[in-house]
Length: 476
Image (cartoon, rainbow, N blue to C red; front, side):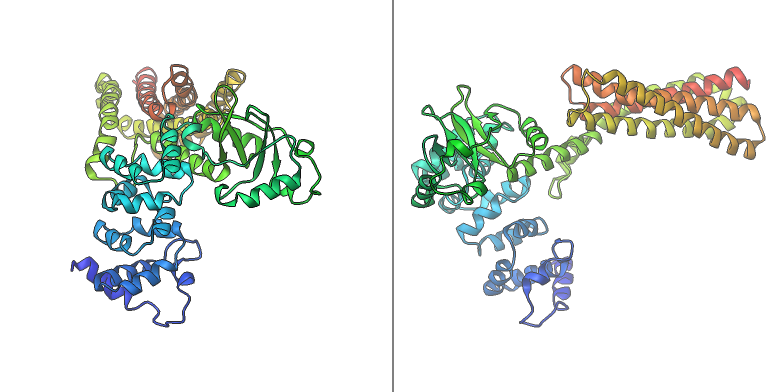
């Protein structure tokens, strides 16, 4: 047993020993995060090979919490936990796991067990899991599944990744226009086993199976059985099967949708997307943008050192080149710096403040582009606004910092030089911060990934050049 495991085991003995204590309450903190002591109890039970205790602990958790637990365990402990999960529980947990952990877990589960677990999932979640399998194992798992489930998964996998077709579930609740509320409810009760696990709308379709409206379930339950569906149906927002998932999330947010039908190019209903799927998309897309702004593509808790190095090193190499270009400005003014050493002390402040201002404008622009708040209609207004903000902030900071510099060095010209350089750099920083993502977006590049490199280079280069150049003109 490792020292770390021994420490955890010792800690678990300090956990409450009252057998009547509610494990479910003990497992989670007030913020719904797993209690570290509970994780230690799971590790201790696995070390002792106490299968009964493991099942008791796991049974106290929601599938999402079991998935979270897996992230805190090593591969050996995950395998011990998996051995005590029923296929039904495994199915719900697989759809909640982080991608890296799920790929690792899938390697250890037998194809027959995995096939049985996938039968419990909606087609979209099942397809998402199958997509992570190696080709050989994917074929084995699909071969072990019933033909209907296998066909649904294969159809979902035929659509491109991160599109509505891949995101949707094929199980939908549809009814013809001529049905009444009573006919619809009776039909749903008879076919209960074939209904989706979660649905909010009954899609009213024409003879060609094209959606012409939707009847919310909450309305159906309030109306007389004789009410025609055509009388109560509401207009629907159709989602093309090939639409990017980010666009789908935008539509759900804009129109406050709970669910929406997905249609083929000809308009035929092929599936539905529900709001629980969109929550995952929004989280995934926002996480990608946040990491991309820092030039990082993978910050998962289970990412390997090699993967993280490959993700970050290229951007650091690019930053090395831009930093060298900015440093060349310092070399060009080497003589001036030698005459007045104070310049070397103050110039990093100009560049640093400009970098912060550029990052602020960049974050605002990238968010506005992602949420479609920034387009050709308001581009000029947005750019002018950021320029005005940069200029105003530059003047305000120039007054404050210039006064401090005068108090320290008692040199009015030095204060003036610093203030003017700061105004110039913050103005340029704000301008580049908003223009860089706009230009990259126009050329089809991801603004979140590439913009920070240009902003950093612009603020460093301008900061050094403006301060040292003005110093050469005013002070020397």
